[in-house]
Image (cartoon, rainbow, N blue to C red; front, side, top):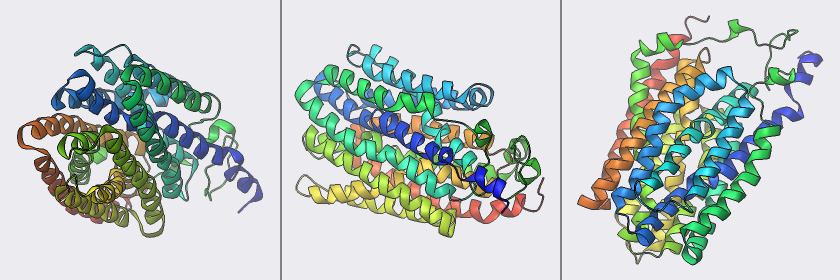
Length: 423
């Protein structure tokens, strides 16, 4: 490799993007998003909400994300990316702080609206875009490392939230955690994040082409489907259905704390610790999924993620208050399945539909997944109240099995279609 190219493909800025993404995920998604289910479980105990009312919190959040994710992709393409991410961090923190004063229906649902707008950038369009732009090689591993800090944050902050909520209540806990989230995340969003290597006069890690004066990547190397071609292909729609099923099943995470507390009879502190085990599983799962992708491809990623998810639901279905260890093991395994949403989806889109219009195609696949999240939150709450938690878990397990079959079909057909006609 030419030395001038090497100097532009392996710099501190490349690794700082991983650190910045990790910090934002730790402070915002790890703290705020992954402790939300702890807060909603406390809504039931402290404010007298029904399970369906607490789950509506997630439905509203996800409906906003369904609407806003495609818009966020357009905004991110046209506006300063650091500004977009920074504003998103602030919105999430403001939403959490508002829980200190909003404690009635429907006012409390202002918070999930702010969360939905914020997460459209942070949860789905930060790591999947920034890391993919900065790394041509080790993409899965770098995504896994950065995204794993969502789980690290969740493991830490879910336990903290459980202790604070148990001793201080929702209002004080919301203020404290909102300030912590802002202090951790905002500096990295303001001063470190860059959407593309070209913003710093650099090239992606692993780039092996010829350096150009403007360090823009040769567009002829970007092959694959355009969005227009993708939506006309059955591959796109099979992938969309598969992701719908995965996202629906994974949304059990939002009701898990309530299941542990109300369904199995554990205290809010114990239920929060069990929820933290999901986050630990999420950490390990993201690292494993990323490494599996880089070594064996996205097929191994999905086989692992879905199998551990099905095993987790089997453990939950046979658990009781006298088998807490079984619940902890199931929660850990479920974290590996939950990781598929953030790690598996971008890798599947990239490897089966190509990088040509990766961001556009990804945003629409994510939107379909978010529709599933929205429906799942409402359906899970209603089913839990009417039929019990076992019905919710059985449905999720069946969905995962069907999703695995569909994903294998997409992987088998996908790359064959677009690799024949490189742009």
